Image 1 (cartoon, rainbow, N blue to C red):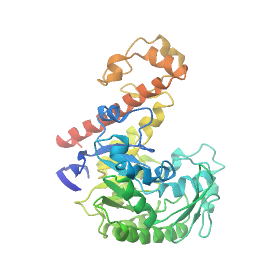
Image 2 (image 1 turned 90 degrees about the vertical axis):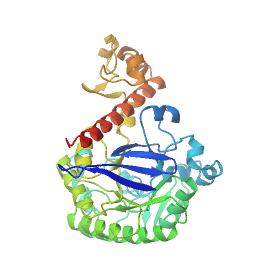
Image 3 (image 1 turned 180 degrees about the vertical axis):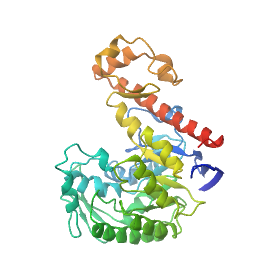
Image 4 (image 1 turned 45 degrees about the horizontal axis):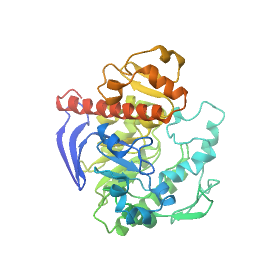
Length: 387
């Protein structure tokens, strides 16, 4: 992998660049849509490419469960398996340490920012009880890795840094990530310190284990604690990684998130790419790009589409609402995607209310096109010196 910075903003930390991989070039900054199980839900790979998507990220843990990395490898690795011609990333499985652990225990799902987690204020104090020695109910974390129970059949699974790298090598993505512990929100300082020791130890093991030519990114953790974020950025940034992921939770408001990202970015090697894990609402994008992030993955455009929500120039629209049956007009008059050029709101509302999967497909296509166009416009603004 080759990363080159083409332009640095004089107004912020934003920068234009490109990632050159065996499977093509990615213009940065860039959204990385999520293809969890080697698919962007409801779309075939050719359609995803038509949404202007440049690179996808798949989930190591889920592909390990089904169909298994050996089957993917036998098929010619992920690119051939899913017929995707462009670059690919795989995460390490470290996020599942949170989502299947304390995340499940506290009903947090996939949300790591406190402001987005829960409306039940009575639940929040429980998070401060995540202290050293405490274990999630369904997984066990030790110094060597994590013992999971398969969500499919309950079998015991162990994934540590060595296992994660070997799985990712068989999957064959262009960019892979080091195995880490993604700590729960409001874990106390001592817990996060101990967790960081593991993440840093595992990072070194991942570097020693990797034998492939894939680009390997280290992951910076440290939760909401500035001194730990800085410590992690300096440690991970000092290792021979090809790029860097920034993981964990980022506070409960957009400004705090931006500040936390800036802490990390200022400590990382400038000439290597930076990827923000799991953040990418429309209102986040300009902030995180101005903070110095090159790529970021997010399920928002696809997740919302499957629930009937379209992102448009007039705001978020819930196409399941009956009022849209009377709207014989394009989804977004300012959008030139295939959906907006060929289908109307009344028809898409009908499909969604009838639970037809094509309705989800059309919204998924539009939302990805809309998000990618949004980031494309930010790249142009950086080029013009406006950001």
